Image 1 (cartoon, rainbow, N blue to C red):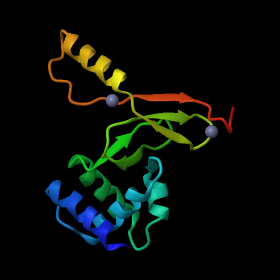
Image 2 (cartoon, helix red, strand yellow):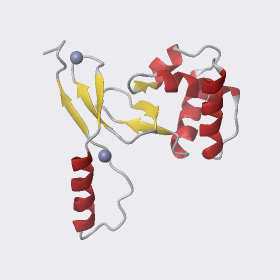
Image 3 (cartoon, rainbow, N blue to C red):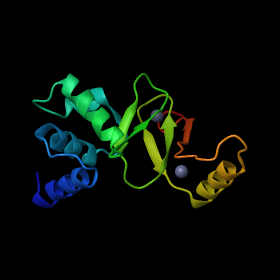
Image 4 (tube, rainbow, N blue to C red):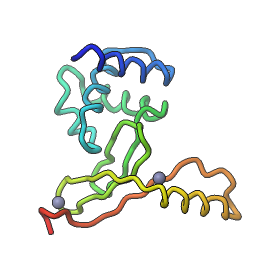
Length: 138
Ligand SMILES: [Zn+2]
Ligand SMILES: [Zn+2]
């Protein structure tokens, strides 16, 4: 592990008010290298020495502290990613491809919808995923 990377991961834990533990550091290192959200099973394959129970427990802690985001891509298991820049996903329904996208217009529209609601006054977050076939699968 490069030193600046370890530093960054320690900073993430610190600002979330979490202690540095070996399992948290190892799991966050794997998560910071992911190119798209992945399942706990797939994350587990990239980790040596950490059992699945510890992984699930740590993922839950990291999610509750706002370090991780759970992404529902309508597959058999939820996917995880670091909660850094706000974005959305386009998901292939045939293979594992997931693409990120950001759109300021969408964010404005969602804000308007939240403000207009008669029954909700405190919309905390949102998720938005598009589903279809990637170019390889189409
Ligand atoms: Zn595909
Ligand atoms: Zn958004």
